Length: 389
Image (cartoon, rainbow, N blue to C red; front, side, top):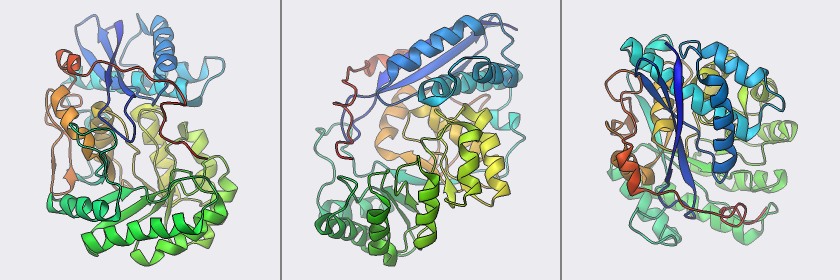
């Protein structure tokens, strides 16, 4: 079996904070007609990732698609200027497609390639529940305390038992007004959902260490499941020091690439939960290794997932095989789009998720359905939602 084609497909995303980004899928086909789907969605970096995949395709054509480990190592080690968001996202998309192709050719689900299941389903936590619905205008998402109270209650009524949101915005140095408003949002959500629902807060690196510590203390009484990216990811010593001063578990890792980036994070004991992204950190092949390293430090893994449907189903296959899997992030505001482009929808019920039945991922992209979501243009920096740092 030899690789014959590497194709790229893009679709616009549903509204999320601001409209204007795309999901990117990779399809790898062999001379037997077998093919697999991957995803390399990188917010606002379509051109760079697509160019890297197309360059890698020149190497891939003619190779044995079953030699996944060799291909992964070659794409990572045999290139100059390796690593970083663009190269690692390209490798991730290719790796996911190769795993899907191999599993389909063997007639087995991808999780069987990884050693088989340790669980049949995993608890999912909802993100994006405060975003506009697919038919709303961009600015129609939750804004007021009452909006967050109402929407979080609706989420619980739908069966979700864990959720995450972003109560603190603005520049790195927090003000008393922003601190109070963020704490008020957290209190409203906790009061709305009750004590048995997990509530997590994502700061997304918006605060400095002093401000993040104040924020953590202001919301500690509301039994926060974890505090995500309280400061930027690029100073692990500062993150570890903060983790030792607060009483909320820290999570991070969505902007780290590969096991080498995660090694100092794990060794510093800076995070109780790590969140590698299957579309950016090296695909399912690399996330298995990151998860194994985390297990030796008794750290849980909750794959980051603000991406499209292949990212989600691939993460779930991994979750079913990881002893130290914690929860799976799912954007509820994306599920309508997933259902329209997948040939077999991801099963989600009562706050748990699993994989569709069938070989490979158990589902694939309906290429004709992508025509409903033509890719959109954007201006890097100006189109991105994070305005103040």
